[in-house]
Length: 190
Image 1 (cartoon, rainbow, N blue to C red):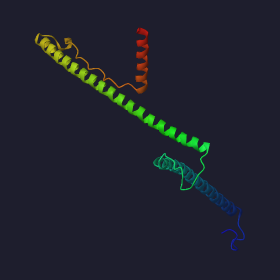
Image 2: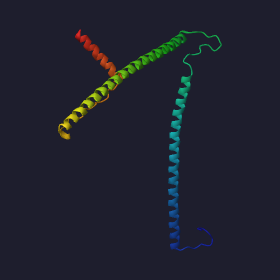
Image 3: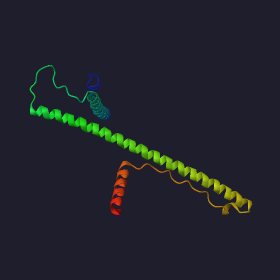
Image 4: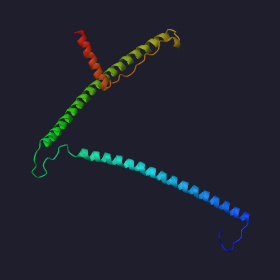
């Protein structure tokens, strides 16, 4: 141990060796401190991310709880109140909001119904396409059979008819655009 009474005299080599050993220990201590700092930094970053996630979850929970409450405000809590113009405007705004919400529900209901009808039309069209294709394939098979009996080579046979792509229900914007185009064409023909 340095500084003990036993080792009162040390040679230069011993001092240099002791100095080198102390430097190594100091370098290791610096590395340990750096690693500990990195660990603390990572832990703090993790806590920040967790905090952000918790805030987001709290906001979502609060929104769900707020949604659960009715949109009808309790006007009087058992005591008399003076009704001002501002209060009356707020009540009217609530009523208008309710009416707009109901109108939006109706519009969505109509849009769903229209989309359902379009889907049914597309499914009927697809079924017709499949039936026609099955008939074409059957006729093709008979033709190929007759040609092979007549001595035709397989590579000389006509190609098998293709079914084609299944028709898709157009997106809402496309439906509106198509209706506008049809209206403009009708106006131009009249």
